[in-house]
Length: 166
Image (tube, rainbow, N blue to C red; front, top):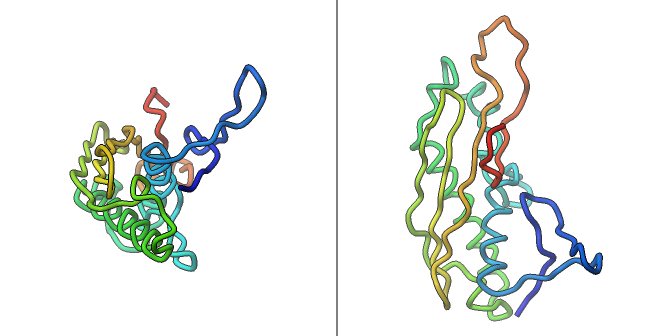
């Protein structure tokens, strides 16, 4: 069994009562690992992260037109690829990994577009042992509205598990 520090929205959590950092393991660790993979910008050197964290850059290089041309299918594909990379990294650890922390199957990936530049996703992951992991809903907020706009654009996209209004 492995353990790691507990995080919320990418930040370390501290206990208010004693100032310590709680540890997570098992299915809770798997859920956190999935969140890390989805909220980290893809790094080809480490083979970790999600291209959904850099959709604006991808749109500038590969797609024409406004960001509205990014489809839910592309985002789903990026999410699945990030989870497949995570599963591959887990397999490299071999028998040293807890089956409650190992992805057996990637279930349903849902992506909903709620505004011109905003998407929400929810992922179901099946571990080798234990109950299915339904991740938090992730908010994907693209900061560019139009690449050709003469108005100032904020670079980058934001992926967070905090779905309160931005």
